[in-house]
Structures are given as C-alpha cells and as structure tokens.
Length: 380
Image 1 (tube, rainbow, N blue to C red):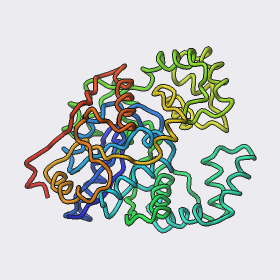
Image 2: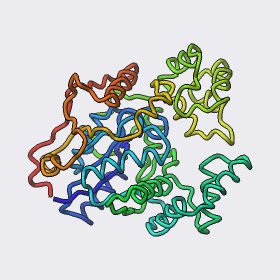
Image 3: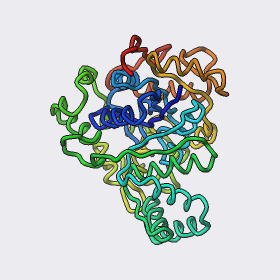
Image 4: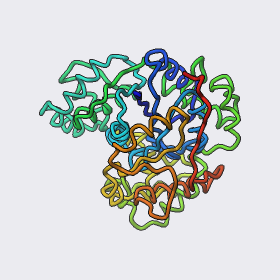
C-alpha cells in the first residue's frame, strides 16, 4: 500500500477541497489518502467554525481515508513551524508524496526558492536589511527571494508550499512534493463558482446560504458554528487581567503594552486588530498572538513542544485502517486513538485548548472519540 499526504484545515471543507481530492484520485487511484488536519484552532489565528470531529467526518465522506490531528503548538504558528509539524507527521506515516494547492503551480520554482532560503548565505542578510527598512517579515522574505532568484512569491499557498519543501530538504525526508493548480483566491470574500473557505465563513457570519459551495452531505454539520469574534469578551478579560502578556508565544516586546492600551479602546475583535495593525504587525501575526493569549500558549510551552511526540488519529475508513495496520510497527512515536490517564504533555495541552474552544458554540467532546467509516469496499 502507498499513501498520498494532504495538509489541510477544512475550515470548512468546500468544493475546492473536493476538486483537489478528485484530482488526486485521478492521478494516483490506488493510493491511500492521508490528511493531516488542524484541530479546533487554525494557522491564521482563527477558530474552526465546526469542530475537528465533524470536519473529520466530512473528509471521510469525501474519499479521504485517514485523518490525523496536527497539534495546536504547530497548527497555530507561522508557515515554517506549521509545515514542520505536518510534514514530519506525514514522514512518520511513510507517506510518499504530499500534494498541495498552488497559485503558480510551478514546483521547480518553489524548489528553487526553498533551496535559496536554506543554502544562500545572503538570504538572511537581505531579510534583515528589508526588515530594518520597515517591512514586515513576509514582505522582507519576498523581497530577498526576488533579489536572489528574480522570482516573485507572495501568495499564501505558494508561501506555505515553500515551507513544506524546506522541511523536506532540511530534514532529508523522502517525501515528493507535488502541486495542483489552485482555482480560487484564498483572500476572496465573495462567493463564486468554487468559493474559498474565507468567503464561505464570511457568508455564514451573515446567515447567507452556502449550500451550493460545499458538498451536499456536509450542510447538516453546520447547525452550530464557532466564530473567533464570539470569544472577544474572554480575550478582553485575559488581556486586562494578565499582568505579563509578554510570556505568550508571538507576543513581542512592546506589543504587550500596546495590547493593554488598545483593548480599552476596542469594542470588538476586528476593532482590536485594526487598532494594533501596522507595517510591522501583520493581520495574521496579530490574530495568532491573540489566539495564543486566549489558549495560554506561552513561550515556555513553545520551547517544550518543539517536536512531534505522538500521532493522534481523528478518523479513518477501512483503507485508512488497513494502511495503519501495515505501518504501525515501524512508527517510532505513540499512535493515539483513545485518551488515557497517561497523557503526553502536548496532548494534555491539546485537551485544554478544546475546553477553551467549548466556551462558545457547540461542545466538542474529546474523550476516546474516533470517527470510523466502514464498508467502503466499492470506493476505489
């Protein structure tokens, strides 16, 4: 048995995701599809609008075979850390290829850019120069890359793809990266033929119908939704009452004082971000920062949870189960399908973040839960 890897948030699973899976099935019909998926919180500092078990069930309903959770310490950090966690899990699961959406759909250019960031001694020097000129970190990276390669990279999936490739190269992993042309715009907030997750979330906030933009069997899961804006009163309380915000991951020196100042002038989540956003602090950097404060993700915890210490199964079908049974003896870290008393410290932290997630919206029950979809013998 061979396996293909996908790294996803499915926030929510939409027709573009279904298109990607269908393309993979056409290209590699006999491969098991393994998805490493973020849990209840996401890479761009958001909450998942529906919980990880519902999203797992939707994925399994749409030809995914095995879903593994990307732990919070990797799922909610910037691209390189996110990529390291997800690709490392796929490597441990002996996945042969990772397939990701790409705006450019040019894997050779992405490999060139990744190699420059790893090998060219001038890269970090240029990034520091551009940062000192007042550019934020992503812009500084893009400018340094262009200077060294004459190639432009500024779209979210290509940037993330470069981080995947860097992880593979730096760790000598045996995974082949492959792109599929992305057919929608991640930042587009309007519904279209194949709508982005962003546009679907925006529509749901406005109580607009999204039935035509997600697989037909998925709509039943959208009964009770989570939005980060609903957590603003908790966020405000934490910022006001915590004497040391600088202890939290991604809270840089100085921004803690600005948070204290601006929270008193902010009456909504978006207003708080607007009051803090600057050339130095991008939207995504601020949202991650706020999420880390909300979930008590400190710099000490970041240091403690630097490596993938377990593989947690969220769900599988018969093919995913067979694949796991084939490789599990060769995996050098625990495979967790049930929550026991002897919890891994990172898993213990993961469970605590679910308790915070449950303060708003629908309840996500953690204990001993795994999604199983059997009887798919006619699927492949």
